[in-house]
Amino acid sequence: MNETLFSQIQRLFERTYAQVGINLEDCLIDRARCAQLSILAGKSARELSELARTFLRQAGDQLYVGIYYSRWLIEQLEQHDPRAGLGDRNIRSLIMFVEEINHALQAALQFKCGSREIASEDFARNLELQAQVDTYLVLLLFVAFFRKTQRVSRTDRRWLRFHLFVRQSPEAFGDKNLRGRYLETNQLAVSYTHYL
Image 1 (cartoon, helix red, strand yellow):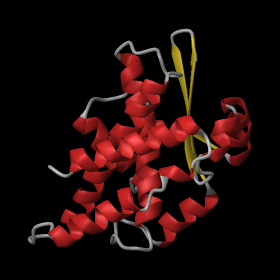
Image 2 (tube, helix red, strand yellow):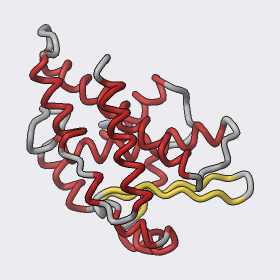
Image 3 (cartoon, helix red, strand yellow):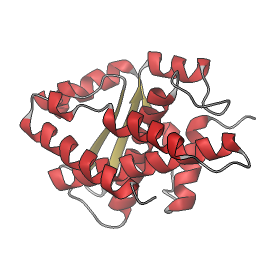
């Protein structure tokens, strides 16, 4: 049986951090459930991408996770599988795909370690910052894999940073809180990844 891209990325993150104890693919939700959870998430959630989202809910000592990917995003990754090569046709889709897996995994790990403030802005900012840095590292691994014996070049790094950081436009958010969250995490991620 062939491993899915999802399971390979989850396993990579678990080898890096810790095992989360569940198969996050079991947390995938469909478009109808995404629409329901988006309504429950409130007005500002309408500004977030409709291509990929992670939903978190706490009930007692349980954390419930829902991961949504649009049909379009999945089709892009199927047509231009990043395991066969990374380029302009698939990098944006891969970024969204990896970030949502990272959000779910990091939230689950934080919850396992006792962090229960999943609705706090600090929790959301920490998840976003972690996802941006980790996604950069995953993208570097993809580039290094295809470079084989060559080192990852400065041009490769600039290309990755452009797609991951420069193309974002946090100032486009109407919600002040979301705008601040994405401006701050983007700036910090740019700074942190400069040294990697």
